[in-house]
Each structure stands twice: as C-alpha cells, then as structure tokens.
Image 1 (cartoon, rainbow, N blue to C red):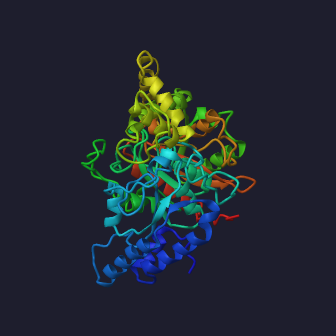
Image 2 (image 1 turned 45 degrees about the vertical axis):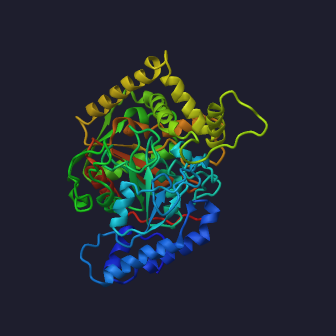
Image 3 (image 1 turned 120 degrees about the horizontal axis):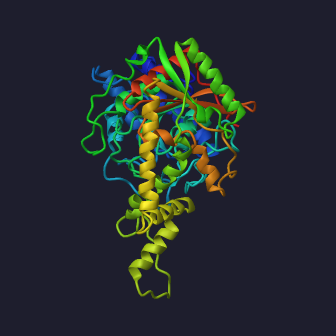
Length: 495
C-alpha cells in the first residue's frame, strides 16, 4: 500500500488492527527519504538503525498485547532540529551546534518516546529558528516539494516540506512568529501553534522565550489533535508551562458548535499587500464556513500595523540574551586562535572570533539589533516601548473576541516565493510574517490549513486564531472546515 500521503489517523488504525506493522511503516518512509531527501534538502540527520529499532520495540509490545499503547504508537514523526534529543545531534542549523548531542531529551521528545512514536530524523530549519525561508541554515536552503525553485518557508521549513513530500505523516515544529504556520501554508499542509504555555518548551533551544512555542504539523487537523494529545500538558520543568488540565483534543473534534461567530480582520482583508489569489481563496473559505454555521462579521485590530515592528524589537532582544551562552567557552564551536597574532585580551579575541565565524549573517543581525535595543539609553525607547505596544495588541484581540469566537484570515500575504528572492532584503522577508506574529505577541492558539492553490499550483493557507486556551475550539472549527471541503492531502509534484 502507498502510505506517503496517508494521515496519521489512518496509519494508526491500520497499526492497531495489525494490518501493517510499525517496522513496515518505518521501512516505507525510510525508503522515500532515501529517494527524495537529497533533491529537497529536508532531513539533516536520519538514523535508519534507530528508526527500525524503535519500530521493532512497538511491534513487540503490540504482539504482547500491551493495553497502554497510545493511539500514535508506531506512527513515525519528524523533528525540527531545535529540540534536544539524546540519540541524534541537535544542530539548530548552526555551525555552533553542528556536532552537539544533548545529554537529555526535551519534554516533548520524552512524551513522544513514551507514546511509542519512532522519529524519522531531524529536519532542516533556519539557523536558531531565525528566518522565514530555511535559507539561513548551515545545511543550505530547503526546497519546496511543490516547486523546487521556491522556498519551504521557515523556520520550520523542513518539517513542512517532509509532509508535503510524503516523507513522514507527522512532524514537530516551533513557532516564534509564524514558523509553523507560514511553512505549512507554503507547503500545503496543516500546522498548529498552541496557546503559549500549552506545550512545554523544556529542551527546546531558545530563540525568544516569551514567544517560542512547540506545535505539531500534519496532513489533517485530526492528526494535529492526535499529536496535541501526546505533547501538550503541564510540565514542572518549564516555568512558563500552564498548570491547567489539557482537554481531549481528539475526542472533542466532533463537538464544534453548530453556530459560531467568525471575525474577519478589516486591516488584513483590505490590505494592499495581500495577494489577489490569496484573498480570493480566503473569501471562498468564509463562504464554506457560512455553510457550516458561521456568522461572519468584520472586526478591527487597530494596532495590527505595529505587529511586525514590535515583534522585531522584542524577538531580537530576547535572542540577544538567549544566544549570549554561545561564546565558545563551554560547548559547541570555538574559533582557532590566529597564528602569529598576539592579543591584549585573548578571551575577548576568542569570543569575538568564535561568534563572527559561528553565527550566520541573519543571526548576527538579530543579536546586534537586540543588543542595541537593550543598551543603556535605548532600552526605554525601544524594548520598553515595544512591550507597551504588545499590551495594546493583546487588548485589541481581547476586544475582538468579545464579539466573535474565532478570527479567520490569510496565513501569509503571498504564496511561496523563489529561493534567493528576499534573502538580501531583510525587511521584505520580515513582512512575510505580517499576519502571523500577532498570535505570538498575544499568546493565542493559531492554526493554518490549506484552502486552495494559485494559478501556478502553489498552496494557499487560511489561518484560524482563537482566544487563549481555546485551542480545542480552533481545532474543532478547522476540522469542520476540512470535513466540509472533503479535504484529502494532494501529492506534491516533487519536481
């Protein structure tokens, strides 16, 4: 049987009924990785022996009739190379961590391990998750399976592309300003950023700690719910983890309200920067939602024009702090001293040389921006002001959700752009986050699902955003939408 675009739920049912073994599934996807990975630069590390060992263990447990096996036992998953694992390198797409192997598993990894999910490998990403196209990776740019000349999006580009190429039925990404949703839209798959604190960040190499969130990527919303049942929940190892009982995401999918209020953000749908084909796809989505019981009304988020400026102050400031540990003194890359050169301060020379050689251009740009904004005399003018704007942004969302249950709009202003098209223009690259960074600044749950394709066949994504802790409702309405359109994953041409 062909499994490359089967949903995780379908594979789970076949495994549970013993119509197929976990080992057979693992071998199938390993074969596809061997065949297609080089062309699209998706996986940066694959350990076939480890994958098959994990799958065999699940087959043995199932043969013994163990009743505690979870729904995703034996279902493969791909992991963004930003999550710490003991049995695979965690490179962060950077020269600094090129050979780093973590001494511990992150919480999400530990939960998937306990659930019996074999990992197919680590996926490509922008360096330290800083980028929107997977072009800043030390391993080179990832390529979109829908058009190899175009970007996968970023920073979780490899996780999105592995789904689009049929190399894994599930993937894990991280989302700091849209890094799950934007590549999901570009690659024609589904991606979910949970409410901040719903999923533990312990064992995730930090970019911007108040914005980072781990989330699942898959072919369907049902698969996202299955994954959320595994990876979410309170974690005492993460001080920002929310101490609330998690809902049953999968069991609640069928409980979407018969009538619900959908808000369309005026500033987004009327934006001059919104591609006409993307806008048309969103309007068609709204028509489908009306048929599903939605009362569609217009809302305003007046401070949305400040989303990108506020984000690109706050995120670099936090990155400047988080990445200060990468100095060559404790672990990771260290620059060799220059032969014959004597320095008055060898330690400072080592720091500066190591960071100059170890970090890529985009990471250095963000560190310098953040360091400047946090420096004496500029803190109040930049970082503090951005935090005040962040509060206004959250208040905009709170007011909007007094009148609606969910917000629906474009995930990205455009479809996937060509590799190299924006790499020399950081501002244009940052504007690709135009519709996604708001959810991170406000800590909201946000979902992107495919809603059409452009005239040249590139995927288009629609975004659903909900109130904090309304993760289940966001998934319910996304699932109802996919049921209404009869969604089935469409194979990418892999050309």
